[in-house]
Image (cartoon, rainbow, N blue to C red; front, top):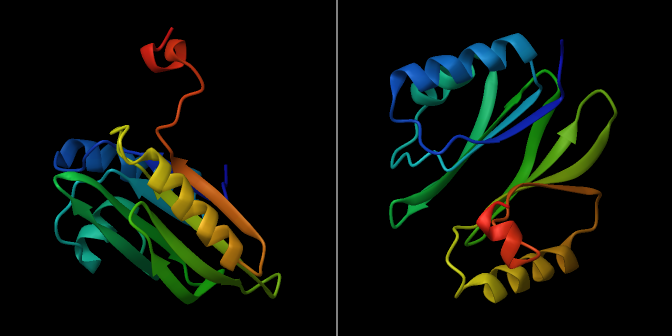
Length: 156
């Protein structure tokens, strides 16, 4: 089975066994783009990203952990996509990608917003500002940590 995109909140990648399970899933699904959220990695490298993605010819970009929370890494297959540019917000990575086969540019915005309620309005305003800057199609994906009601927050 082949997927085009996997975005996953992994809740930390410190455990080698967990990295192995994720690598197995990625190899089995064979996505063109992989976004891992809440990695909790402080330092990123080709070998570390490869240890999870299992890819040889890939590009990647990462957003660092903030106060021991978060961390985003996105990797893509260079056969299918090239990175035109990127920008980082307080809770997102915006990748402006060129789809080599379709010959079109588009944005992939991978979001991770920690659960703290005090900054939610700032988070929403930041995404709103980003939307006003986009001139190409965009896909937003990730963990927004937003709920509609108290019942949703409690998991009921």
